[in-house]
Length: 401
Image 1: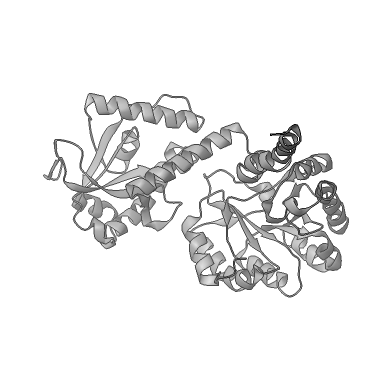
Image 2 (image 1 turned 180 degrees about the horizontal axis):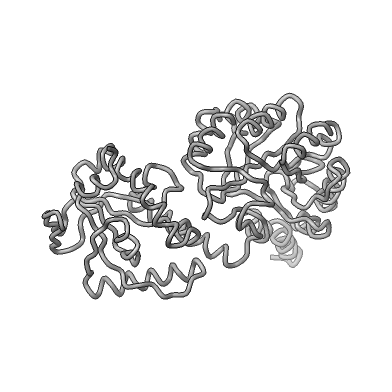
């Protein structure tokens, strides 16, 4: 291979490849999500403002008492300053999207470099406020985009949950349902108040906001989202373990309790793992007996802390009780159990505690300490134990009365 081709390959890797992997995909240095301790998210809207669609989005947010961040196009902001003023007057945040709504890979390096700063200057002239955040079209980056943000003093803003309202086959009910199922506290949600996505978002938004309120959620501007800081190495480590949990769940047939990703428990059908345990209500659980095993939603548990987790646990176990009564594969489950270092917390919400065999204890404790390191805690996990209730005892505690 000639030096010319080697140099060309290295140039493409440096200009497109590494920015794609490190920034566009891994979101290193970008705002992506907040902590999961509070029922708080950041709704964000791209591509506006447009008089035909943006007012309906603002109306829905006003009626629900929610606030959002609008990543606007410079020319649209200049053409419709009254809409920008309304956004600000109603407590929303206005930030920069672009001058030209073109994927960064198809821009000249000079054009991609200039766009963030020029967009921020033009939009700031309309708002009368400094622009601090920039989300490039399609969330796409090249080296020139990164340098343009840095020179302009802007922080890149990505998302953790994409509505997909722009897809050709997207429908309001489908987008709303998918968002509500995948929603977690601290999520940064991207939707559109203009362009193709507005066709779906405008009719969908009132029902979405009503469902969010019913579940106790609120939306705040991205700059005020608790824990929303630029992604660093620790955040990447955390995301890697969240991805590992997802892989484990997929392989093991484990799902969030109640079918909602923000539930503090993940559950699946499993055979009871102990030789023989006699429970307080007289049931003798034996190895292989059908049961439902639950696992904790690790990032939610870490961000909530122990006391709040106990409160949430009591509430979220009700969703597991409904699953136990309505999910066909759980019909024959006789026990509900967890193998974890959280036995003291689970005892507070009604579970019996039993010791595990020594080898199993060591293995689970090593895994628990690894998780603690991944989420930034000291590796001091307590000895794992079996927390268990019979099906009947669990439903007496958490079933609908």
